[in-house]
Image 1 (tube, rainbow, N blue to C red):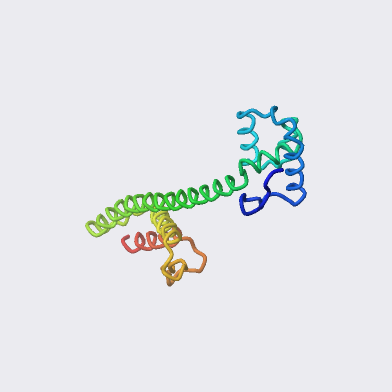
Image 2 (cartoon, one colour):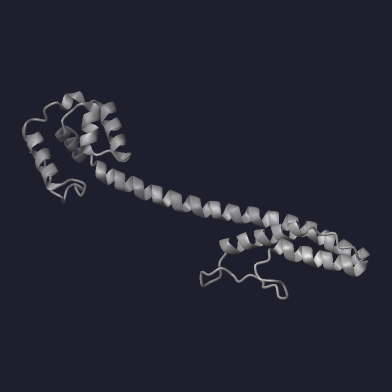
Length: 190
């Protein structure tokens, strides 16, 4: 008789009828156990890890369900699966945190590039009075800053407030606002 005492094995995956089947299978002398060599046992365990249930695994290997139940009990598949999933959770959490940091670093590089490019155009404006800034570039820079803002909320967990633009119609895109400024500047210089 198999020892199905929950103190010695993690049996939370087995129903009471499964435990009874395991005991009966062991009492009967483990009939058909020779059909499962080590390779098949590992493949059956892998199927279990992938979400297959005991009945499904038994059908795939064309063996009795109680044989698969016994193997799962003997080798403690459920405990292994729980440990495996816990490890995956940790790996995923670390991977997401790492990806978020890399994304922030990329956005900062892109933001610095566009800020430098736009800064040169603003310096040229101060030097010669000609404003040659493409409003789409300003809009792109503000969108990048907005992306950084969403990735880096303040201490309360809320996104930092956007800089309000007064004197412009509500709902106007940043590009349209800056295009209005450029057009106004061109009209003033003519």
